[in-house]
Length: 81
Length: 151
Image (cartoon, rainbow over all chains, first blue to last red; front, side, top):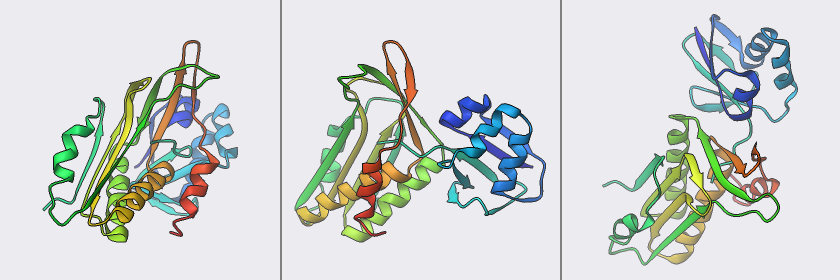
């Protein structure tokens, strides 16, 4: 299982903060496609060029390969401080 | 000896609690502190902010930023406290305090920490006015500030 988290606008847009995806090995990009296929409304986030992804708390590119038991997160650019 | 203190809190930040710790080292000639707070916007009339973050990743990123600053500017001590949750107008959002032998390193180290935090730490601000709320967009100027450090 891959644990997937969403934050801020992305969480609100999807209406969920967490999902579990049953895959052993998949790229971040394909994982996002798989998630967005589940709901038509969700496909909007696929077009969001500013979307960021992390795997196990490290920022990664979308071609990064994720494995089962990894924690993936999708979120917008950060605005702290 | 602990060189840095990282904290994410839902409580009000009290910078005075860290003065003694920052000034304790006899070889340090400088301490610099920075406070970022919720400010009024003349157009939108902000009454509060909601700060969301990504637990664990936030602490990991802040720790890395502090360690980079310690190495790059030879800082002796670093305090980095960021508030999350509901924060009212004029309350503190972030506190950075550093100590170093000389002032230039302390000033630059503080700015370096804030520039990295603004661009890399997983926090998201939602502004709340009397009538509505909206997520804050990242500022281009924050990205430009980061570039000057040639990371």
